[in-house]
Length: 330
Image 1: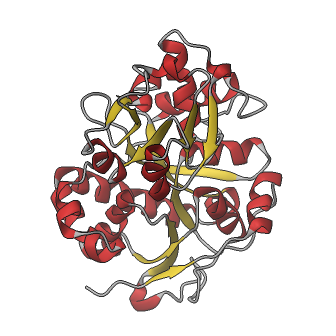
Image 2: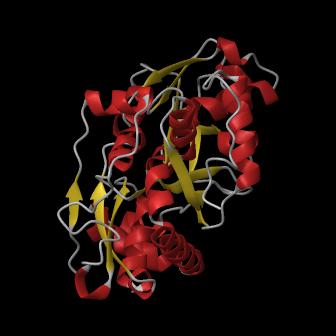
């Protein structure tokens, strides 16, 4: 099936908008009829969904290919965003009707005044066994656990996100001082090379970068911080603007039902999702076939989100404890 995925470019001004807050705009699908306008193609309602160019996003394409969204009356157009924070204002202004992104960014945006609503769960770290992201260090670094990261620099893709949050909590659990940890920002594709050159002491990386790094005999796994901090920690959720949710409850309900059915099927058949990856994001077929996938589940992980909110307050990511129930579509 030929896939049409458009790009959404978000510059510094639009990211700043997410952090300063703004009102919800009039939502509409990009390049199509406004969602809920009754002018949807072939009797379906057009919706625009923002995704990141990462492996778990392929589950949405799987749902489209399998006709699940169409079954629930939706014609989905995918748009790839440059980052979770960048998609927030796009959802707020209606450039995107829905998006798939990490819940920490959503809760931070709500704390700053942006009107966002979590619609469904999406993906989560594994509560036990091998996880889909972890911290890696050189074998000769002397770093044996998270507490040993004190005074060291750990590279994450962005600060004040799930990486540094869970690593700080993991360090405390291991008996360390979270305030003594240092973090710097670095793109995932650059991390292994910078670790090799000694420009960073440890790296927090997801698949497929994690498996590739651990295949090098000079590196070792320090641990899985998501598992240690919050077992089964949600890594992504779907969300929309409060305005869109209020004005289009039936569309939101249909989207939630379609996502939940899609993710249940994807969790039952992860190989089918892996098979999409070579075309979906240009991943090598051999890498895609062996990729460790996150756990898919459309149910809202309220308990884990509440724990995440408590950690966000503890480490001063937000000014007040997030009200998960208030920011969730019921």
